[in-house]
View 1: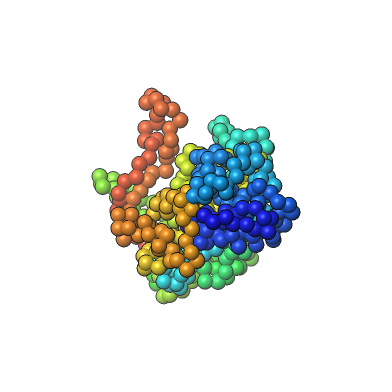
View 2: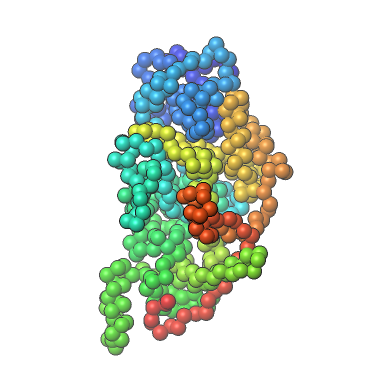
Amino acid sequence: MPRSRGRSGVWKPGQLGVLTRWVPPVLIDEVLAATGRLEKRVRLLPARVVVYFVLAMTLFGDCGYRGVWAALTAGMPGRLVPDPSAAALRQARRRLGTAPLALLFDRLCGPVGAKGTPGVFWRGLRVVAWDGTSVEVADSAANVAHYGRHAKATSRPAGYPQVRLTALVECGTRALIGAVFGPMHDKEVPQARRLLSALRPGILLLADRGYDGYEAIRDAASTGADLLWRVQSGRLLPVIQPLPDGSHLSQILDRRSGDRLAAWQRRKRSTPPPALTAMTVRVIRYQVTVTTADGRQHTSMVRLVTTLLDPARHPAAELAELYHQRWEIETAYYGLKVTLRGPDRVLRSHTVPGVEQEIYALLTVFQLTRTAIHDTAHSAGLDPDRLSFTIALRTTRHTVITAAVPAPTTPATTALAVLLHPRNLTDRRRRSRVSPRCVKRTLSPYAYNKTAGSVGRKAPATITITLTPQPDPTGTASP
């Protein structure tokens, strides 16, 4: 690679392999200037180099600092590359701080799906989902004091401190539209409220039943986005008007109004119901039956509420099937926490600013990889689901080591052609599978300490969705 000199007069390797196409050196320099991190004197490790180094730490998470540096500079002539110590690289990270990586992720996050991308839109609405997860970090005193450990009253605290992370994901591409994180004592719903600014008209937001509070639904709907949320079985949803497709109009109440209406119903008053603080929604009830290959069946009831009130434009059967795309965010979290970070691996930073910097780098590299997959699939006319995230990461790591940086005019498919090889493409339609909710890793390797059925396994299954009969429209709460 030819020697590159910036304003500081020192070498600047402006490459992160194929990902340089989406995070070019000029973008790094803009972020550094905006956050006031440009060098004031000539350094062996300029700020731009350190940004690429922090991103490379995510790609080579199983390597120490000098191993990451060796991978980042492997494709450069040896006479041009300095040989910093691990301590020098650690100090360079501290000088850089969190702000440049946070701003870089803010510049790169957002939906990437185009109008013609399969699975991105449903009846003109961009399908997205939000949910929370946790990320384990190094067991240092600073991290424990700030983030805390996950624990229940009936169990011992977790072995590592954990960061609570909530993300908004585009279901069709699994790209990150936004993400926030903080200590474990942060709750998922308040974190999700910080993502409301990313919602707008033309979006259909999917959410699990942990977000079904009146205030959360009201605030999300006030952005102009449409909602399709699962609600808990005990949520009071009186029948206001039955609809021809088996759904019905109802009102979701705030906590105080719900208590007043429940008391009014219990007493069977003949007077009009009390004044309520409520929001009109449409309720869809259906039964999901999972049949495994050995003939066993499991049945569960699901209730959804949606702000799409017209059954002619938005049929209940299609919405019931669409809701299960919410699982795409779980697949995205698997790619982020297992495929990219590495299974059973914790983040390496022992300080809070280092953890924040590392998480923003993790989110940035994940977003860059998802963008690369989408652009490659779109240019080839394929569904992004058919391209492997694992192979994309493996290819990216190879291009970093070999310093294979595509020119701006080079099609993405040239740099990621391995993704399009027939042997690497998944089936056009994946088989339905079930994976029971249970402990995936037993606490002891000894057979006598294992709980029966504690180790889960995926199994092919047939999933049937059946809309249930219309509830009795007497004004009583649905079960």
